[in-house]
Image 1 (cartoon, rainbow over the protein chains, first blue to last red):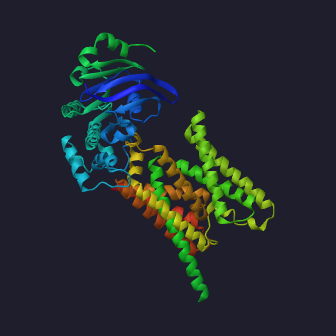
Image 2 (cartoon, chains in turn brown, purple):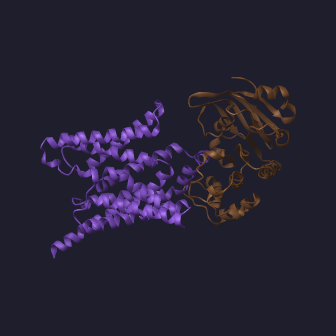
Image 3 (cartoon, rainbow over the protein chains, first blue to last red):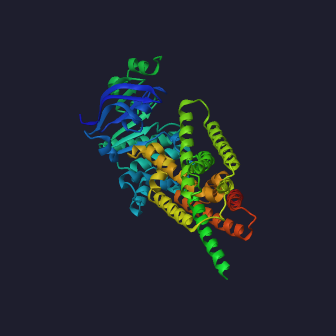
Length: 237
Length: 277
């Protein structure tokens, strides 16, 4: 099993409260991985800690053996939808082009090439007709499609998505999961934060179950069993 | 004939100064309004006032650089206190801003009264920092203002892509390996610097308006961030230019309030136009 991310002794805290302590794990490459657990269980904090968005208290995280600093151009991250200012003066196409900013680096501006690429990605998500819309005029599902298109624009090896199915219509959810499965077939690693128990077996082939600690990690078929589900979702703190 | 040339000369340098300040304030104002920190800008502007007076009390002269240095220091101190209150107290953010704003401005007034009672003839003119004034402006002042304005505008142009991403989607910005702490501090420093060069013209009370009004107008006309920056700079510059021309033709009217009235009119007209459209 090839390893995409190795985590040693990771401790993350948020506003001085320890959320997750001493996590050790290896996350395999080329899987569609669900990170599941109850609200407040630390799922988002977990990926933000991995991605250096929240400062780690301790721990070492390596991406295919490399430090975050040397690897971040191959990582795509989709934050939760409500962390973004949707009234910001920007359009659908513009947001998707933002996916090229990391690769372009400081000072360089995107050009025609990036624009064409962005339109291609909008087509994959079936929202190319909205390319010049101000982003607040989109529905929840359309907003999420824009985010996915931006992530595709990053041409990453590892994808992190925080609750991509939250407040999204059924059709969009289906189309997004198809895209994620295609990414997996191409050997990419996709991690999806998810809090709904339904469809876990259909969507993910690998699971990380979290509730203030890692309850279980492994193939969905092996660990998505009643004992672990109870421990993850119905344990009182 | 000579006086006409002299008058023209003053007119030209003053106009260049106010136009540039209007322009740079407008551009920077777009950033702080979109960051939802307009009120912070207001607090920092008011808080700079005691810095001006204290600087005069210590140095005993009205050297412009020293007065403005004092202003910048006090803006920075007020920001430090605002952040500490936010971190360690349960007081709501807007309450702490209001407290700092009025507290510092009050302190400035007290210091001004003390200075005025000393009978030091040099102190006359310090009160001009409240509403702004241009009659005593010097060519060297305009030089400094121009250089600073151009530097600020260049920094924003160079970092426009990063600033856009930082304001729109901070977590994504961080995931690209950028430091939001660094960019946030840089923007704050730019705001303080622009306040320092602006209060001379429009005064500490009306400074926010110069920052905010053009950006509100610009937002009504465009859904693109860069166009917002450009339009806001344009509206700010025009307000500065028109305000100066009106004020120079009507010496009874102070320049700061006129600039503010013009930029507010542009903002209100833009909002109405957008609604009607």
